[in-house]
Length: 296
Image 1 (cartoon, helix red, strand yellow):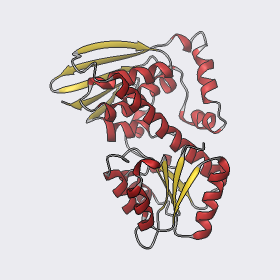
Image 2 (image 1 turned 180 degrees about the vertical axis):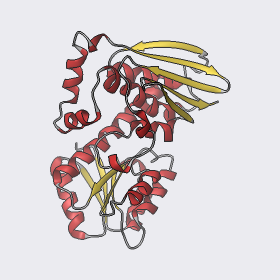
Image 3 (image 1 turned 90 degrees about the vertical axis):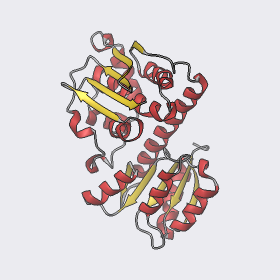
């Protein structure tokens, strides 16, 4: 993890020192800031240096929400994960941070294991998003003239590669690829392979998610399932319809960022897709079909 850099922002010296020590021992590079103003100077000087920002909510000069707003207004840092550390756990306080873009949370006091799990989840997601954006750039807008198409895929790797390709049908591929990949991966993991929310939490915590996915892909029943993606330009929109062969799920609770899931290591993909990547997103029926659209 030597190349993963985390900006630690905390005005309390002991707390900042503890965070830095835990992260450094795990192999992260750490840049420290003892105030909101110092944090913003570091961000403004080297905005592309950070893979995550570990941000204290309450600081005297510039609080965490103000820094968060500033970070999310920068195009070069819009997708950098901000992990809010706070003792303010009321739903209204958490919701304020979620709406501002703090999709990862740590409740004070927290253990070293919890800290490392959340930082690992945030930086893993960010690196994955950057790889997708790089793949989109390599491929170029070769599909910008596509009017209608249908694709079938099977595995998470196929989902990521296909998402990078299909994003090039959009005017802003970098914006679309993040949400499209989340929806397409969900169709495999949660849809066809029937990995539930709580089960995925345990698999991530025990570092067994990849092995479980491979095992289910090799099973006689689940391994036969496929996901369909249809792409169509119609009525001034570019529409993606993703349809899996699973039993569906209760999708209503996942369209918005939820305070109840703010402290988990996953569960943000659908809401982030809706907020960042698409102008319209809706699930149908029992939840095994979703349509995401952008205005042209």
